[in-house]
Length: 130
Image 1 (tube, one colour):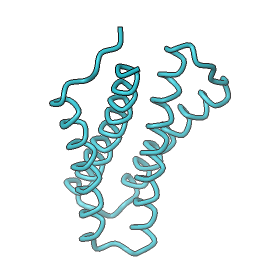
Image 2 (cartoon, one colour; image 1 turned 90 degrees about the vertical axis):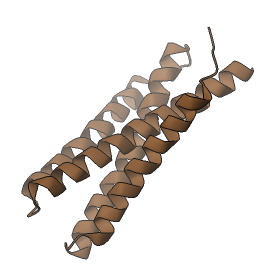
Image 3 (cartoon, helix red, strand yellow; image 1 turned 30 degrees about the vertical axis):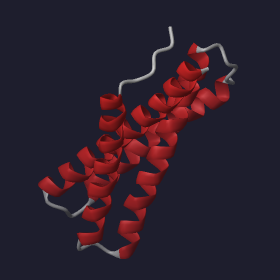
Image 4 (cartoon, one colour; image 1 turned 180 degrees about the horizontal axis):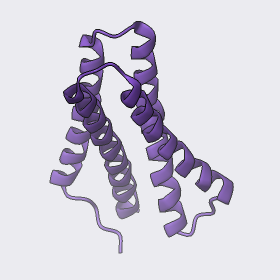
């Protein structure tokens, strides 16, 4: 059963992705941390987004009986969890206020959720039109 996602869900997914990414990046831009720290957090965002989309794709491929090697599937899980752990470790050791740490954690997770939802919607839309 392939259903096209509703326009409301597609819009909400894009809003979640953009809100999470933009909030995170604006927070980094305005932060009073060293440039190498900003680079670390920005790289974690990019790594996390790519890893989450790859994981969603490999999970979906398996559900649709498209071959996915176990090593790639495991690497997708590892990369996604590694991005979250690297952010957590970075925030744990950062000299930021707790509210700032929470802001970065929540905007990061919102961006990851948005990326997964956008990728799912893209795939659902394509498979519904075929």
